[in-house]
Image (cartoon, rainbow, N blue to C red; front, side, top):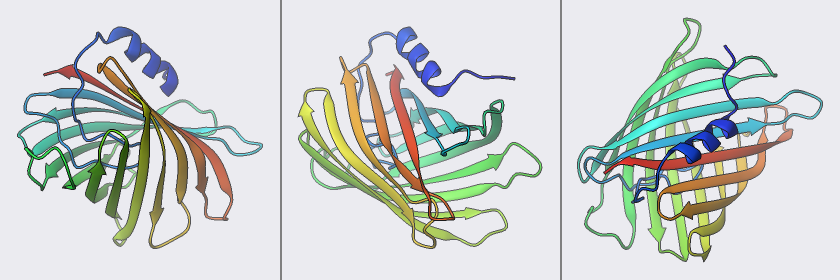
Length: 238
């Protein structure tokens, strides 16, 4: 079954969702996980999409819709799906992943360093697929002008050993509702998969947040392929 492109789905959501108040949701960056969790009872609709274009070949796309729920002042629960489109073929459902995010620092403190931890388990949708577990220790600090974040990442694919990595991002506010920045993610074990993005972040009437990134990702041969990313956060309830 053919599914709409990620950008078409994002545009549809923006057209259908009414103006709602947007609060801290732990989604300040594209590649990074932020320590903040939604307020109790708040529900967010999230999506992350990636398109990588190889020279002389069709594009490869990934699409991850998710729902994020504030469970307590320190804890949130997330459920997301993973879909892929490789070499122009139909979109395929690859995995489902429940996740828990915990804020380790004082939730009443909205200034200074914030620290959190998140864990997810991705269940493969196909018999020949492999489950994957991941944990992230996240850090974030800053204000409306400057903000930085960092993640320490531990992941383990079924049948493989644990792999460690990290991610870092920084953003600067240009005017109300608009910021620019840069983000990167890498494995400490191998060069393949290293990604670096120039990014832009938009908020509109505090009803939704849109994140765009353009950069490159390195493959096993050392070639750096251009990649585009899109992230969307919409508050549904709360």
